[in-house]
Length: 328
Image 1 (cartoon, one colour):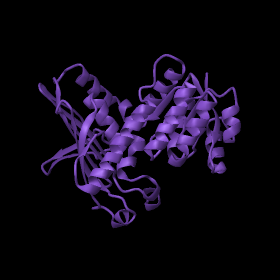
Image 2: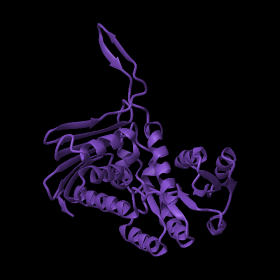
Image 3: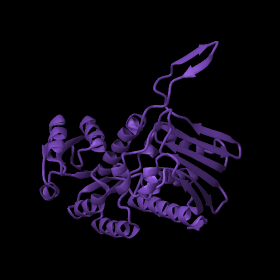
């Protein structure tokens, strides 16, 4: 059994804790959170203990650390866990500052422990199948990639102010997806962004609507569309145009019910948000990490992947501010 200490008992933490508890080769031993009441509730639900960071990391019975706490704690906890010899899974991002991420990854490299970053969308069954078909050459060489990611409603303003902004908080998932699907690194990008959904987001220094175009050395193009508002649900789609055809992975709907009548055909809406849409992706992501801790594979998404996605997000911020393309 692989024993986990988890940092963070919030919304994402609850998902990860449940997935650890359901895995036959893992157990949740300790939950650490600044909100001890939240930690106690989550720990009780899964038969774990609540603890303090230093003691939990010093515990030789703990094999792995899962970090689902606030972003500002990620890098420090990764370093502490790595120095303690623990395998580490960390929710994105490692940090909002590129130099801080680089310093953190240097500590991990010296410690020689596995580190996996939580870009869960690579583990979505539909996106993974699209990726497999693309790599198998089913539509020939990729020419155009389109990624659509739109939230049903903007997050609370308090969250917006500490999130790092749309590009580093929301689009960073899509930038990782673009790298994964393109199979080569972008060499240039252009970002256009506006505040169209909530003026308060603009007043806080962020944007809520953005389109980014990326170009690779081979000439392949990718376009990412983000919005903080989609009145019809959580909009998550991918389309790949290749030399010999097209691949698409569409939205997951609340059900497959369709009502057909003289008035038209009505289908169900997309699932409401990421908790439902990516439930299976979160499970598969954790399964993969546990296999990596057990030495059966290498982590699919490394610290270097986390850094590269942040570099792209930073370039998006620069391009949106200057109105000019950014060479990478």
